[in-house]
Image (cartoon, rainbow over all chains, first blue to last red; front, side, top):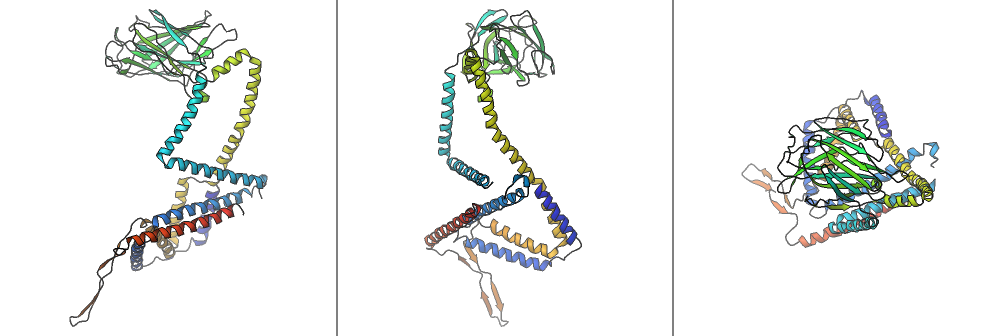
Length: 90
Length: 426
C-alpha cells in the first residue's frame, strides 16, 4: 500500500513536470554504432572469462545486492514505523 | 524499545541460522535423509509408546441373516469408521456412491440420487432414528443381482461415540460434513478390488455398554453375502496427530478376508480414563491447560497479525509492480527520447555482460584490415585467429583463477561484515 502510494505520487509528479517535454530519439546510425560497441564488449567479457571465474563473481554480486537491499529495506521499514507515534520507536 | 529492536535482530539472526541449517541439510541428499530419518524415528517412537497403552476393539459376527456383528468397544473411543467387505463371486461393473452432508438427526440431506441408503440407530431406549441418505451413482452402474457380490467400503463414514454419565449406553452418532464419500468395492477373481455399486442398504446399529451391533439388511432379499467387515476406529485425537485409527477386524470363519489392524494413534484415551477416575482433578487440569494453550498461542497470533499487517503495508503484488513498471517505461520512452535511450543502452550493456558471463571465448579473431596503394601493392593486417590461453599455460591460468576467487571472496566477506556491523550499530 505504501509503495504503491509512493509510486503513484512519483508518477503524478513526473507527469506534471515533464508531461509537455518530448525529446528526440538518437539517429539510427548512432544506435548501430552502439550495437557494435556492445557486441565488442560481449566478446571482451567472454575473453576475460578465461582468466576470471565470472559466474562466481556474479553469484557474490547477487548475494551482496540481496544483503544490501535487505539492510535498506530494514531501514525503510523502521523509518516508516518511527512515524507511528503509538509504537514509540526511536 | 532498543531491546525490542535488538531482540528482533536476534530473531532475524536465528532465522538465518535455521536457514543455513536447512541449506546444510538439504544440500546433501544422504545427509538430508539421515536427518529426516532421525526426526521420523523420534516421533515414531513417541507414538508407539502411546499406542502400547491402548486396548484393541474386537468384532465378531453373531448372525448371518441378516449379517450382524458386534464390536467390543474399549473405553475412550470417540468415533469410528466402518468398512464392510462383501463376498465377491462374480465380476461386476463398478460405480461410486457419494454420501452427501448428513447428520443422524436427518435435518440436512443434500442429494443427487439414484441410489438410497438408510440406516437406523437403535440405542437402549425404544427411540428409533431413521434417516435416509441419498446417494449418487454413476450412470453406468448396474444394479447388482443376487449372488454377484462385492465388498462395500464405508470407510469414509465417521461415527461418534457418546458415553453418557451413567455408563450404560454407547450411542452411535454420525459425524457430518467431514466424510462425504462412500465407496463400494468388489473383489475380482484375481483378488483385485474394484469399485462397485449396491442396490439399497439398511444399516442399523444397536449399542449397549459393551457392544455395538451393526446389522445390515437390504429392503429386498439380500443380494450379497457379507465378505468381511473392517471397522476403523478413530479416536478423538485428530488434532494431535491428524490420523484416523484403523482397526480392521474380521472373524468370519467362512469369509476369507483377513483381518488386519493398521494402528492406533491416541492420547485422548488415556486422558479419558483419568477423567473417569478423577473428574475434578481432570477438570482443573483441563482448565489450566486451556489457559496455557491460550497463552502459548497468543504470541503466534500476534506475530502472524503483525506480519500480515506489515506485508499489506509494504509489499505490493507482483501484478501491481509490473503494471507500474510498464507505466513508467511508456512514460519515459514517450517523453525523454534520447535520454531514455541512453538509460536503455546502459541496461542493455548490463544485460549483455551478465548473459555472456557463462560463455567463454577462448579465441580472438582479429579483424582484417587492407589498404590498396593503387600500384598493386596491398597492405594487409589481421584476419587471423589466436588462442586467448596459449598452449602450455592452462595450469597457470587455473592458478590465476583460484587466486582471483580467493581475493574476491575475501573482499566480499569484508564488505558484508562492514554492512553487518553497520546493521548492528557497532
